Image (cartoon, rainbow, N blue to C red; front, side, top):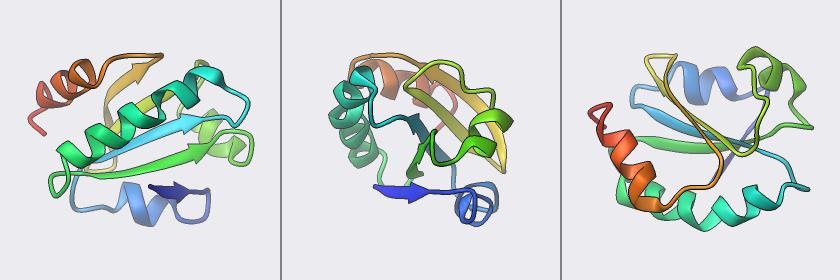
Length: 105
């Protein structure tokens, strides 16, 4: 899983040709740790259709503020540089996949 930072976010997410699903997380966040495997499974399921990456909120406060992240984990789907879907909290892989499919991913 690619680690995204304030330095590479524009290139890897905003300028990406494919949709990109980004997880905003913190190292101390228990729910984030619970969602790690779910995120990996969904990333594998949609491999080739979208990119994925993770933003550690404490190391990237500007991105955290720009996208108004207030709950962790938060998952944002970017298409054409714009947020088209926002998901927060713990969920099953099937639920996350269904939400992504609703956006034609």
